[in-house]
Image (tube, rainbow, N blue to C red; front, side, top):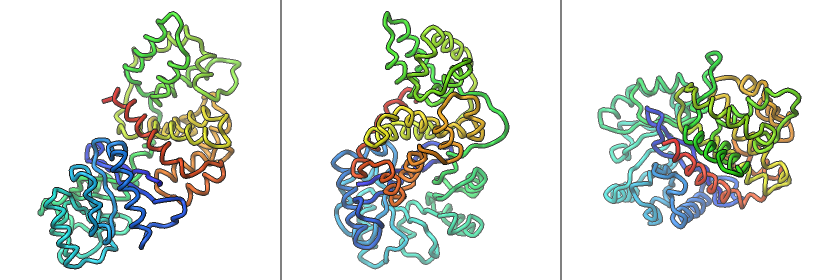
Length: 402
């Protein structure tokens, strides 16, 4: 079973929910016809057994359903306060479907129309829909102004999907959209140089407490630093300024070379600095999930000996967004390996498959996942386990930030 998730934000860039992307197994190439029923049944069953909160936390879960699955009673395995039922645009509407949707609404489920491009006035499910999703690549914002006004007057929640730029995000807000989905949130706003971000004071105090022990643990300090991509970045910047050093392939090795005395001095200086820019918490969550997931993937592949290097690379994969700089500029002067630099900046080199696998998994491009999994020689059947563990781990870490 493959499951990935794509974040859905509100106007304040807070998480409202996640759309779950899935496939039942590695042999099912597409999601459609009979295979879609099998895929959905597998995922709903898995979510019920393991707890959907393990995937979406307290957020909403948006799941695509076709006609047959809407008509089945498997939907009711998931509580209505969590599940948003997305009616696929390909679903054939008849009296039985209308009756079934009315029943599900009475049970407390919310109904979303996915990739809506029908006539707002005449489409029979519109009066029953709580959320209407517009794919702005299929139905550009300028072409749906009248429908949007009518939907707002009827108190519908409007979701703009495939938002790719800040400009599109702002335009959708101005039109009255409530929810937003796309990769606009993980793209840098290049407006010139920016200062390093402030790391959590919780991390600072945890490191200093460890340093005060009679025998500080490098493993413990490494784990604390790796839980915060900003802190890891700034640590690597500091150690990279030391002359005569070669490239570092892991945070732990960099710490050993840095030394505990210099580390403590550095932490104290960082605590006096309060340079920060607001970024969605999802950026931090994304980098943490990538770091943990990639480490799991590497450990179960032919790159087992390089798992720490792979983990650091994926932890830094959102640096351009956090610093609002091109990736090459963000990595400038850091003593990282050429393989990490080439993968993040040029999309080339030995570690490229890990970057591509991470991105493909997040986007639910299962064909590409298969391709890169074969290159690094990992069994795709175990990816879901690693992804789920990564989400759980990142959620635990992020409790310090909330």
